[in-house]
Amino acid sequence: RRYFGEKIGLYFAWLGWYTGMLFPAAFIGLFVFLYGVTTLNHCQVSKEVCQATDIIMCPICDKYCPFMRLSDSCVYAKVTHLFDNGATVFFAVFMAVWATVFLEFWKRRRAVIAYDWDLIDWEEEEEEIRPQFEAKYSKKERMNPISGKPEPYQAFADKCSRLIVSASGIFFMICVVIAAVFGIVIYRVVTVSTFAAFKWALIRNNSQVATTGTAVCINFCIIMLLNVLYEKVALFLTNLEQPRTESEWENSFTLKMFLFQFVNLNSSTFYIAFFLGRFTGHPGAYLRLINRWRLEECHPSGCLIDLCMQMGIIMVLKQTWNNFMELGYPLIQNWWTRRKLRQEYGTQRKTSFPQWEKDYNLQPMNAYGLFDEYLEMILQFGFTTIFVAAFPLAPLLALLNNIIEIRLDAYKFVTQWRRPLASRAKDIGIWYGILEGIGILSVITNAFVIAVTSDFIPRLVYAYKYGPCAGQGEAGQKCMVGYVNASLSVFLVSDFENRSEPTSNGSEFSGSPLKYCRYRDYRDPPHSPVPYGYTLQFWHVLAARLAFIIVFEHLVFCIKHLISYLIPDLPKDLRDRMRREKYLIQEMMYEAELERLQKERKERKKNGKSYHNEWP
Image 1 (cartoon, rainbow, N blue to C red):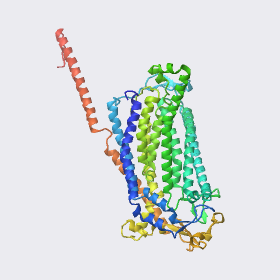
Image 2 (cartoon, helix red, strand yellow; image 1 turned 120 degrees about the vertical axis):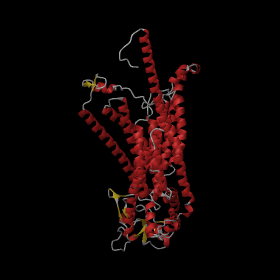
Image 3 (tube, helix red, strand yellow; image 1 turned 180 degrees about the horizontal axis):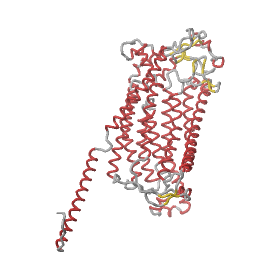
Image 4 (cartoon, rainbow, N blue to C red; image 1 turned 30 degrees about the horizontal axis):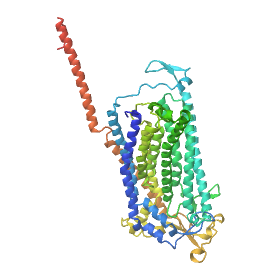
């Protein structure tokens, strides 16, 4: 703060506070993961999957995907249990509460910093009008109600029309993101068949994992390319709006860039979490894209493993890339500058440069100030909270990154960038409102992840309603016996469509062509009065999922609001210090006024003047 000013000092104070608050979240997330590791051998569901050598699953793609034993997905079932276990719901509630506690205690911390830095009573002066705004609207003026001077004025109709055009541009760019996700979806449904017919047995036997891994990497490349485009579009749309002051311009640009990057980064994750495998139909009546490509199904062990891969790869790759660009790019630029100076002045002349000239030859701070630093951390905060129920290790990865990040930022500011002009600020600005919005969104998404993406609700319904302990009010591992068989439906192989009928007849399993295969769903068998209709268990699971979402959201939101109400914005010691300071100021003013009056009275007596009705 003393060297760079309050604005940059406040950023490092916030980053340090955020990193410190990640320690309990990372510890609990690691505990949830280790709980999954320790209970892995006692998990009845993964045991049944690994022992299900007699259950043959239907192919997951057209033609080239073979029938497979359910036991072949034993590894994936075990990995899924590491993230989807009994502690997941507790961790989702904990993270929702953690986000609220983090924001509430940051308000208290910011108040202490503002008091220590003498920013409590500081208010930004009347901002200067942007030169671009003044040049555009200089012909139309009106009186400023504060200064009483004429100033340029933007008509309401003009402002509304520009905002509408800007909103249309934002909507169009979000549609571009959705189109990119749609392209990734088409890639996934096309390549899963290609990998299933691959020459290498390793890829052929793990076609779905290979599809997911390559799709995530391609999606990451698309994200990085679109980010460059979004920056230019956001800059153009913000300038089109013609904001009046610099702070209005900064807030408008920040909101657009965050919206673009957030949608760009999380759109594919939302697809995997809530749409992958949800609208595929069933064998014999698959839903298709453009009546051609069969929609991708989840792995026999569930969709959560795909979401974990998406979260892990995107988080690790993006944080690694950001750290490289933050430090590597200025290092390369400064090396190139020093090289040019050596060629121009020679080595001896360059070493004799004064310190101020060496500092001047460093790279200037980027044009948007601390925007990139805040944006990186806010997007990470979103990853840490929004889908944390599917990836409990996200806070740990964020913590490890931030421990490095805070030192890299310090090194970059001190050694690689010119010292920026110091400026004052009372808080982190619009970013606080964005953090609150992410905290609210995280409650909703985690409720849907637990209810829709994971198998937590189907297992509970089976344990209490259909399992060996039905009606006994128990839900232990012994109550899950037979769950895997109950969650799979039966399909008659002869009912396959011609275009989806597999090339193999499954004779490698029993020596004769298969008559039946199994698939994940709650449907009636083929010989029932309504073949492949939904069973009663399906409706019970659906009702339980909806009930869980409503109860979870209301419970967590009540806890969040209660915590917000109970935690005051100002610490008690700070409030007492501020009251003490106010009291001392009033005492000083009273004593000064009393001393002045007594002095005036003595002077009047000395001069022989007296007044009637004089105050004592």
